[in-house]
Image (cartoon, rainbow over all chains, first blue to last red):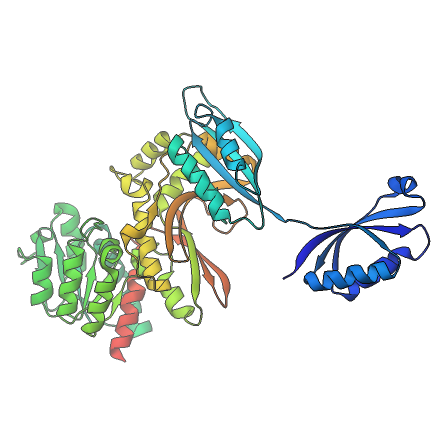
Length: 169
Length: 336
């Protein structure tokens, strides 16, 4: 299965070095998503330029071959890691959102592995009236969104909150 | 073809009106000679072998509220009319009842037993006993069509089953209730509260005096059950639907959603055998974001991709588009 990886390389500060790095990436089916040249860090590395790549690769095996060939060519691989893709759940909460301990609501969502409340806007028309909050929850691609929604609905039942979730969830 | 109309309220009278208006057209375009031989309402039944004077019937119903005042009409029930009057097709247009399905359920079963085709707009019996009704119709070798039961004029059942017959429908999402769409649309546009817009909708006749059927999602759920059965072959009934209505939606919630590019709509959804009715956030640019009292359905097809239909979900005349298309389909099939 295709995976997205972040790849930090160090290139010699000589012409043609970037091509040297790109060839193996392309050869093993990698698709470059972004390249960042970290010129300002150059001095720290004694004439070598750190370059940060984000690439899509077909599978683990292609990635291993790619890295081996890069090293054979004298390109130093300093960091390699899988980028976990994030997905977002947007939902509305209607009810006594604040009075039922908003902090606790957020904490209990964040407790789930790979899940984090990343944004929240609140509307409070009147202290005694029901308030509303629109919430963004960042979810790692590996996490089942239904599990996240189960947790949300569980909290909502307990605190008598109405949940309006987006269509695609 | 001889027709019996059971139920002579808004829908039944609307049919009589459209049949009067389209008599010539039906004959010329479709070669169909439709004759209404009986009309039944709660008061009794008007019978005429040579065909009921539809103009007169509408006049009697509007002025006296009871078809029993039609010349020669008798105190005869719907089931009796189905059993005793000779006809090929019954249009069942009594009010929908989601608790018992009656009286529609008995009318439909009696019609099948009498070897009569049925066209209906009545959701209740279908939402409660879909399998049984379809099986009974098949067993008796008669046609049973119900396009008007979902989405009024918006074609969805026949579209999926006939036009898209090469596709498998994998999921359905839609706005299947015009009243709630009207209320949410007004709240969004005017920033008004739920109660206020509901009262306004009642005054305008968009919402019933008892609006719970609409705003609590019951009506949407009934239609969803019919779609799940008829289009996706899911053996579901009303009790299988997870239902939430729109009564807790506030203007502030709508505003927050709007700031982020969403609208709130009451959506019926069938996916992976799961049936749910609930208010949802819909991106403003999404095809399901239709305004006013319109209905919309998005069919996810395995070959065609997404197909979306929009139309008027109610209305005495508009709904006849669906009823008429069903009558014509049966008329053509019977003629061979």
